Amino acid sequence: MDKKTMMDDLVREAYEKGVFAGTWLLAENGEIITKGALGFRDAEGKLPMREDSIFDIGSVSKQFTAAAIMLLRRDGLLTLEDKITKFFPEIPFQGITIRHLLTHTSGLPDCFAWIIRTAKAEHTIPDNGVVLRFLTGSGIAPDFAPGEQWAYSNTGYALLAEIAAKVSGVPFAELLKTRLFTPAGMTSTCLCHRIKDGLAVENLAEGLCCENGGWVLAEDSAWRDVAVSLDGSEGDGFVKSNVFDLLAWDRALRNETILTKEEQAMMYTPVRLNNGEIGGGGYGFGWGIFELGDVARIAWHEGNLPGYISWYGHFLNTDRTLIVLCSRDGFDARAVEGFFNGMLTVALGYEAGPVPLTEALAVADPDKSGWERFCGAYETEGSGYRIEKVYPENGDLFAAIFDTESGRLFAVKLYPFGENTFGIREDTDEIIFGDGFLTFGEKTGKKL
View 1 (tube, one colour):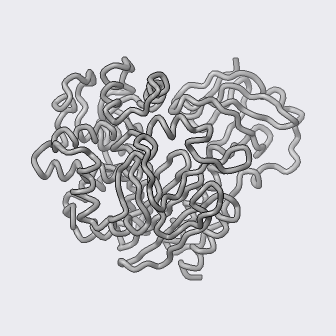
View 2: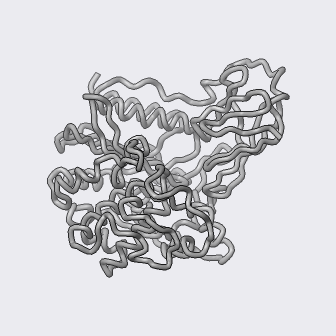
């Protein structure tokens, strides 16, 4: 079966299972192999998705921030080894360089929860300058010394945008437009703040979140605080684009329209920590680096915002690019991961398996006699999702989960995968119960 047929079939399956609505494009040697649009771009289901629909691409934006930094380096306005205190002496974090920010090895604490609390307290949507307020006034300690560990940092990329604007003397959104988007022929791409500035983006695919069995606008959902309070951020996300503009960017990279091969090679080189180990499983400057033996070497990034999921892969060992943009979020994380992995599998020339729904993977008629011992309060450390309580409801098990990034507490249903193993739709990690404790991915929760 050819790639077009396999990919189109996979997209249709994901759409019919409620996992995907959006656009996709696979190109090889500059020629489009398959592209398309499925679903609707509004909450009411009245406006059909268009192939050129605009999406918020989330953290896929980070590659543009990194590219802008490389151009400013070429201009002699900064170096990769410059300390952040050179540009903002008031920042109390010492020894952190531009390179540390680009590679997520700075140790800067995450700013999202603090910004959300600040925005709510001040009844405003702050601009990106709030990251400086956070770094100078929050009093939160660094997570680790520079270069010692790898930890994904939106704080670092927001700070990169502030540095770029300061040294160039140009607002960051304008810098991206004049130095990257326009030269690359990306006529429909911009960095803008739709909610903060009350902008109407033409042909926008509205980001929708799954809630109470239906789809609602992200800014009207339980994720409102995240979608609204962070809308003034720059550098870490909030670029709006479509599949055709991202293909134009891919061609600009291959043709060295903006960045030279040498500059790109630096960006595609996985960071090494102070101890010599590769950080982040392979992360360069604004790109994850995925290597599959002799089969593929891919610079890639995904983007996740309330209502949006995106994936862009720039293949390094062959002239191929895969772009998938989705405006539905929160239905089933395991199915979403399976779908996006399946798209990559097809792009590599292999047949993908079915899209795996969490509910369908669950044991059909589980023995619930021992479930009571799993219930109770738990103390779970670490960032991300933390399980605080497990409790029964209508014959099923549920968990109260706290998200450290957004500061949100929410309930999830537990689907039995085995005697003491459960899955949830909201995350791909399994919950495994032991004697007086549970594990959730790499985190351990002690029963209180």
